[in-house]
Image (cartoon, rainbow, N blue to C red; front, side, top):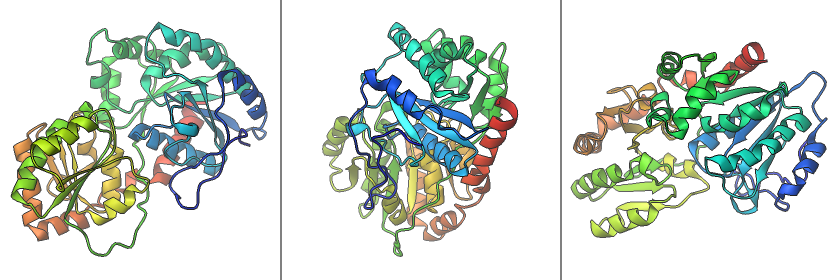
Length: 408
């Protein structure tokens, strides 16, 4: 049963929810809890995915929605989603949520790390108790700072889901993420990492680590758009922020699009660096070549028409964008950063892994794919290699096993 005010998906946007109803105010949280409480089937455990803001359009939110939907569809657990806040207009999650999944927020304002979060502890604790939450899954490791103390003594188990990697979390010694990982995450009931390399890093880097499991992000089935003829498109998807390497993208695109003026580089996403990117497009006369598209409702339509996918990130966990490109059969080029791309791309088989931040080398490899149609075609045909471990059902089996045999 879902809380009132949530609507089914729109017919003209099958991949995304279009919600009806009014925004839930802080004061109505206890009413929402009471309404949803007691709806669990006899013997069915209740799982809560805890997010900073489930209405955001990032890869973390995308992965959380895929797993939540899958677990709800299987019927093993009752699933709900709780956010610190929901900032999108009308509280609309960017990615589709199953009708069986209730979602709500603790408050209306954006919450920043610090002492201000302490005021939310009592609300979160009340939510756990009134909702009879058996397991809370923190989809950002910093949320452990709230869920661990809030769950103390309630019987709620806490699972920390790492979407970056240990080196990123502990990169600033005594920074807030480092302190949370070393002093709070160690008190959770389990950590989920995206790669084996990161699992080992947590076990070696934490003094008293809890149990740590590897579950990769799932590869969503590509929605085919009937596009038979591919365009001369390079595509990048993601938030337009510094950690996604937008500066490296511009530098690489300048080289590639100057050499190959009949190709286009389509950048799908939005973020803080959008204005800066537009200024770079003008400064380097890339108008009509480097195309900035905002958040689009149908990313599949763009990926289906493209031939090459490029990732310029400074850091990733296991990038959903690369998995989507792989599902669409694109030749992939990415910096070989600490974690992520190396688990998805087989270098020289279905893509190229580039020494981190070497834009000239990246441009050269992209040029090689543009000039060599046979190589490009081979990479595209080989894109499906190794996809089995990323299949949604395989990933859901791993979640079910960990939750059922190790956490509960």
